[in-house]
Amino acid sequence: MKSVKSICSKCTECCKRYNITLLPKEAKRIQKKLNLKEEEFVRKYCSLSLQFFPSLKSKNHFVFSKAKISEKIRKKLKEKSASNYFFLLPNISLKKSKKCVFLKNDLCEINSVKPEQCKLFPFISLKKETSFWKKYPFCLLLKQGFKPEKNFKEKSVKHYSNVKNYFESIKEKGFLLEWEEIPEKGFYFFKDENLGEITKKDFLEAIETFK
Picture 1: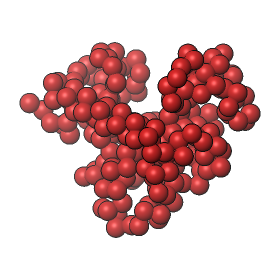
Picture 2: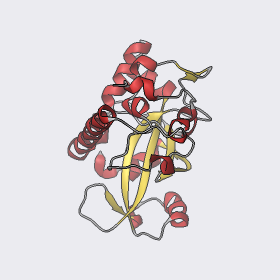
Picture 3: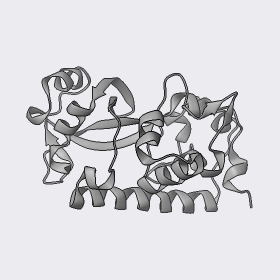
């Protein structure tokens, strides 16, 4: 049976196009490898990430009325969706301009401790997805017709469980108890589309109920 490591065709397109979010434990592993204090690691290598998804009105803790979203962000979202409610996912990601901050000379500098979604990409769907190529048309692995085997699916399910537990923890404890240090700025997204830069102040105001 193939290992997760062996599925990647090493084209690095995902490192250039994909926004890599972190779980706190993953961030600590990278921080430890780099021998950095948390504040320095977050400042040098991390970015805020705020994702919005259209939603129906709900009592779900993560669903917001657009009236509670700042005018700056609300204007951008209005261009993308007529929805009055949005499902909001606050997170911290690895910095990225044209590529991931840790991609150097087409090699990953933190390969031994890279986030789980990097190891599993592109087979990280939260559903029983079979048309991965529609979501990630740039992936050469998918263009070659590769399909995930059982061990990849099992790891994807486990990763999804960890992500779910992480957001449940945010709901119960608040975002700032999961992350003692957070970046000064980052980006906000409509689904996976980058809509622009967001400051720490804007970010914290948007996730007021997670604090």
